[in-house]
Length: 159
Image (cartoon, rainbow, N blue to C red; front, side, top):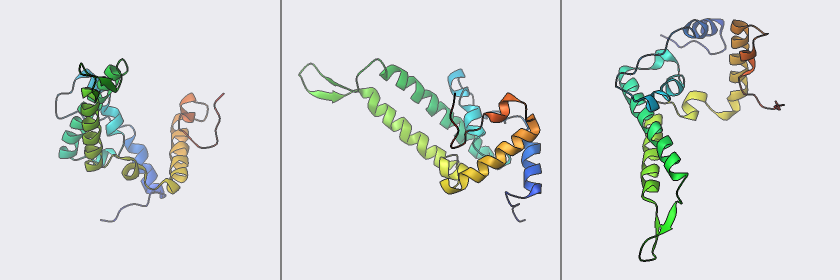
């Protein structure tokens, strides 16, 4: 079976029909904090591209992102380095944990292919893809709808 071209009408119809589909449910239990990241991760690639194993790894990614957010909140009140009782400069223990979590989250994102290059392709192709998405959303939502302008695009200044 050949893939549809992303600039074809058939592809646009397929994308439009899948926009109404609900998000898949997580195969593993997620905390409320981790569940915040579920739609962000899942909407990073086509819904029909997710496999059962990918969804399991997506749960792990959501848990890691929640832990990263929590550690960043903790670190907001503490310095990344400090002097211990003997005057030796040390890194805060949470910094090491944060680095490990970030590395693991990046690894999982690459594994399930939700990192920037996998989901968006080369940067040079983004303007055309973003315009196609805006046009499609505009036709679905209606030109007068406030939501039609939520997609970022270069050269637009906020007022």
